[in-house]
Length: 147
Image (cartoon, rainbow, N blue to C red; front, side, top):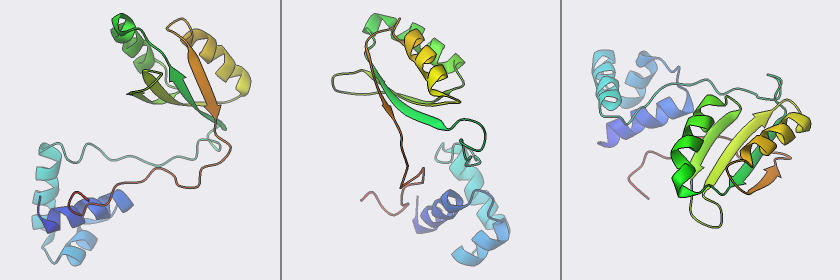
């Protein structure tokens, strides 16, 4: 990736709907050149997709939580299949430390979260943190060279 590719990635992270014309103006390229670069970034797996950022509370999911889960290594594949099938799991990461999984989840109520945690406990021990507020929301990383 050169500096122009990094600028394109930065602009798309700020606004996935930014027009080719706007990107072209900000990178001093033609629209077809920008389009070709974006296509290459997608082909190379740098740009994985384009997504809308949603207000979960307004969508009916005001309870956001992080759940730590201890999964026995022999149960990982079964757990991953389960996690993939539960739409309330927004993210699932295998992590280091006392717990092996970190899940970001959203629910309509604490009661529904409680039922979910009960189901999770069939895989292992859990620890849950409910989010009160988020001061820095989801965002892209700076596209400058690996700093």
